[in-house]
Length: 104
Image 1 (cartoon, rainbow, N blue to C red):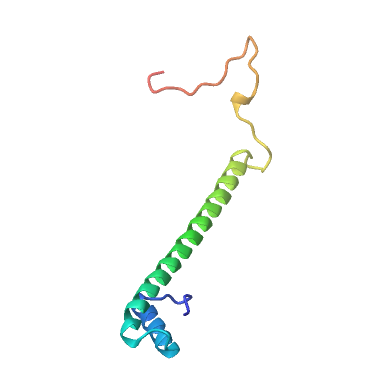
Image 2 (image 1 turned 45 degrees about the vertical axis):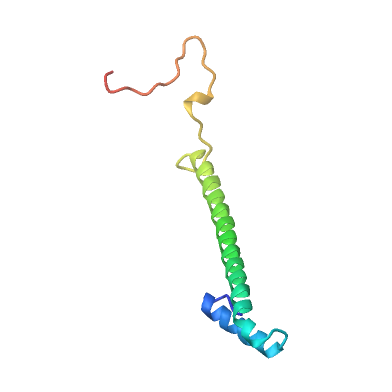
């Protein structure tokens, strides 16, 4: 069963039913029910694998974006490390920078 191009429940059931009939282990009248059960399990596992992969891929991309954003925010326009005014120690004569408010 090829899952690269996608698999439908009906296609999976038909393929599994054909293989069960070829084996002759299960009586013909029970092949459809058995194939339906196995196809349901196959489709669930395929969906689980796809969503697990997508989740891990999205988390890894989010981590890369976060790390790039953190690195970019620490650098100035010439790619030299930049620092915020809050990083310096304030002496008695200095005041930390405060943004202006609308009423000031």
